[in-house]
Image (tube, rainbow over the protein chains, first blue to last red):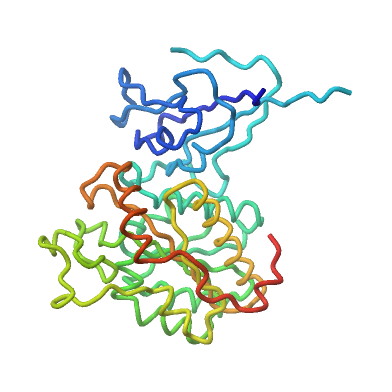
Length: 77
Length: 261
C-alpha cells in the first residue's frame, strides 16, 4: 500500500494558480471555489483522500505555500 | 469535503525553506519567478550559506527580490548586476555572490556587463530568468522574444526582418574562456524543476571552489503578459520555447565534473 500523506496550504500565500492541481499524480488537489482568501484567490486544498505525500505539489508551487506530511511506515522489528 | 487527519506518526517531508522570508510576493499567480526563488532558497539552506550569501537583484519583475530572500541582498541599476556583483566579490571574496536577472535586464541593457563578467571569469553566479518578454513594464518585445511571437510592442508577431533574431544567451556565453558552468534548464514540470535545482547547486559549488563564472538560464512562464492561464502558459513553454531554446549543458569546465552532489 502506498504511504498516506497530507498537505497543508498556507492560504496567505496561495494564489490559486493551479500548478499543483495540474501536476498532482493522484489528482486529489482542487481549488475551493466556495471560499476566497483575503487576497481574493480561491485557495488550493486537498479535496479527496488518497494523498501519498509525494511532494510534487510543493515542487511546483511558486509561492512555497505547501507543507507536505507523510506517515512514517513502521518496519516490523 | 474534509480530509480525515492521519492517525499514524507523520513527518514533514517538505516545508517552506528558511532562506525565504514570510512576505507575500508581488508576482502574478503561476509566475515561475516564485519557483526560481524557492529553488535558490532551498539550495542556500542545504549548503548552509545563508550567513555568507549576497544577492544582487536586477530591474524588472525581480526588482523586489530583496524582500523575499532572508539573506543579504542589494539592488543594482538596470542591467548592472554582474558589475555590482564583481565589485562585491572582489572586496569580499569569501562571500557567495549571486545575481538574479530577467531577460530584459541581462540579455538587453545588461548584455555588455554579463559578457564581460564572463570573459573576465569573475567568480560569481548569474541566475537568468528567460520568459521571452519584458514582464514588469507590460510584456514588450525583448531580445529573447521568439520569431512570430506577439507582444505588446510587436502586435503582428516578431518580424525577424525588422527586429532581428532572438539571442540565445547560454550558447553565447559558453564560447567565452572565463565561463566555467553555463547551462539552460526549464521550470515547467517537476522533473525539470529538480534538474534546475541541481544546476543551481552545481553553480554555487563552482563559485565556492573558485572555478570562475557560472550561469544558469531558467526558461520561465509569464502567464499575464502572454495572455494565458498558467496551465496554457506551461504548455506553450513546452511546445514553443524548448524547441528554440534547447535545454542542456553548454559549458562545463572539466574540473566541475569532480563536484558530486
